[in-house]
Each structure stands twice: as C-alpha cells, then as structure tokens.
Image 1 (cartoon, rainbow, N blue to C red):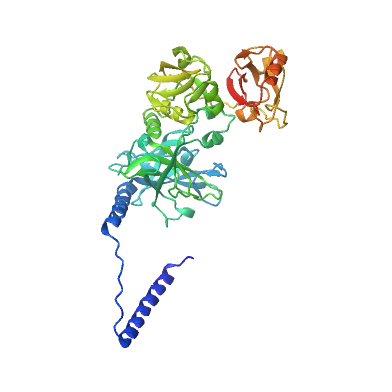
Image 2 (cartoon, helix red, strand yellow):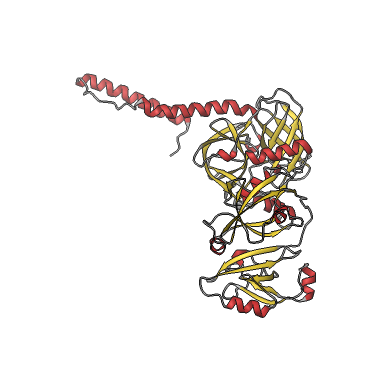
Length: 497
C-alpha cells in the first residue's frame, strides 16, 4: 500500500492523539505496567550510518561535475536500442528540430566532458547545463561508435572534475552510485538524481553496439562490449552519466538498460572507465580512435571447443582466422589456437580480450599465451592499427529448413559460386541448407559457407564431406572449418545430437 506525505502526517497525528487518550485513561485507571523497550545496539547501526555518510559525501563531491546534455537535431533522432535493451535518452515531443537529453561528466577543469556517442551522434547543436544552472554551447571533440564513447568541449575554466578510477578493480557485490540528469519530459524536477546499488556482474556482451551500427557495416566487427552490470536505478536521461564507487571514483559510463518498458527494471550497463579513458585520450589528442589489433578473427570458446582443444577450463578466445598482415600470425599464432592470457592476465571471453587490447596503443608489444591442442605456447605480438571500414556489405540470408543430424546439407562448390564469393578454391563442398536452430546453426554456420575441413581433414568434394558428417556418432564433436565471402574463415565445433 502506498501512503502519500499528507496521509502519513495525518496518520502520525492520529497515532499521537491515540497515545494521549490512552495515557489519560491509564492515569484514571491507575499506574500502567512497566514495558521494556528493546534498544538497537549502537554497534549494529554504526556501519549503516557510515555507509549513508559515504553516499552523502560521494554525491556532494561528484554531482557538481555531472552535466545535462541537450542535443538538437533537425530531424527526429533515429530510434536506438530496441526492446529489451534501451538507451536512456529523454526525447522531446514536437515538430523539428528535435531535442534529446542525456548526461555527461566533466573530466578536466577547462571543459572536456565524457558522454555516450549515442547522446551526441548527428547533433546539429549541443547545449551543456551545469549543476549551477549555467548553460554553454558545446562542440564534439570526437566520438567512437564502436565503444559508444564521445568527448565534447565547452569554453569554461575552473570547473569541478570527476575522478576516473580503475574499472579492472571493480568487484561484483561492491556498492556503487549512478549519477545523472534524467529530467523527465524536459523539465528540471528530477535534475541530478543519485541512485545506489551494487555491481551485479562484469563482462556483459549485449550486442547492442553492433546492432546499432548495423551488422552489414564492417565497422560493427570492431564493437567492444564488455559492460559492467549494476542494479542501481537508471532511467531516461542518464545516458553518459557516471557510475561511481565508494572511493568517489568513476568506474563506468552509464550506457544502457535491460527493460521491456524503457524504464529501469534493475539491470543497467556501463562502459568500463579504463576503456573510456583510452578512447578519450585518443579523441582529445587526434579527434579519432587509434584502435590497436592483434589481427585475428576470434570467438568465445564453448564446452565442445574446450574438449577438442584440450583446455583446462571452458574459458578463452578461439582464433579462427587472421587479417591481412596480421601481427599475431607473424608472431607465430595459428588458426585453432585458444588465447588464454594477455600480459599475464587470464582471458576468459571475447569482449574482455577486445577491451584489454584496446587499452594499448598501436605498435605496443603484448605477451599472448595460447593453448594449442593441450600445449601451452607464448608469443610476443606487436599490435597493428585498425583501418576501421565504413562501407556496407551484403548480408547473407539464413534458410529455415530443418535437415536431420547436425542440421545441415552440403553440395558441390561450383567455380561460378566460388568466383562470386571470392573463395580461395574453386572446387570442394559448400553448405547448401541449414537449420538456424539445429546444432550447426547454433554454432553460426550458414548456407553458402565453403567447407575447408572436417575433423582436420581437408575437404575436396561434397561426397567426402557427407561421408565424414555421416560418420559422426551421437555425442561426438565434429570440428568444421569453413570459408566465407572474401576469404574469412570460421571454426565451429559441433556436438552431434
């Protein structure tokens, strides 16, 4: 039951009046019996009081550095992050120009501000409002769609600054505060709101950045998604605001929520501060991100991969292919290696590896540890700089038929099909039909993929591929390497049903 403030006051008054009447009756009836009141030991509430005081101190220290960002567009902004993942822009109704609101935080006394790319993307005019209600015109210094980080600048001095902390040190379960400027409906009734919660998880891959850029855009392959998850309440207008630890340090930039309504349902996601710091430095120094790369095509390992490659645990990143001029290939890595360590830090998942590499600069050397079919190998790799493409590429269609067994059928690869798709060979076997919900489809195999090998045996014909696939018994893992349009390869270790 909800009780508003007025009803609560009336209830409190009635309760006090009741106590007075009861006391009068007791005095007429004789002395009341002695009642023992339980007292809460001070030591049991001391910790809660100290935590409350810490929240107050953090809010006092950080809120002055949080800003409201209004981005004006000549046309309505493109809708982003569809259900179940929403951003928390605060769109305003009405005719063009359209205004969307978000948050940001000041990182230098002379006016550099960190926020999300999607807050300021395609904006014609940006206005920044400080906690003291001063407003400034802002310019975009640089933005990076692949990390959803942007930097804007206002002409001001002696501004309060938020301290960027070390997101790698954040631990699941620790208290955090989310600070932003929701400003529902464009008003100021909820400006600079502070909410509390904990770090619920780390390393969440949501696939929202690639979705926003469009999967047909090759740049989406460079999206880095290794979010910090929190249950601190985050709502419209909080995009770009800081996620702060109990030391008052920013460990993340609030970026998205999981919701069926567009409002908080307890799952918020923030870009790690270490990644944001690296991107921010590049944007300020050169207006663009210099993305370092190992030069590998990678995917997370599965239980089947761990069995095939004899891994000590189901963790690591599988190397499927190499970019042209790949420094990893030059250093000695091979297709089928599983990266388990970078600079003596264990690697558990794809997003984590991307983030760890992105925190370096091109031409820096990193130590890479791999497992090669059960054997540990170590390499030193000098990182290359990515030439992030912006061109669109054709999207392969998925067939919905449901073949038996592994859920795929094969056919002969014709020279004409090989030429159209840019395959390195003109004969062999190609996947002709696949069920997206079958064992092979769940491992991202597609109709049109050219089969290079099955269980490490080179495939020269469809009949050979069919025989090897038929030989798979229930529970066996079939290791399939395929080539895709443009010469890219994909490794799928599929367990036979």
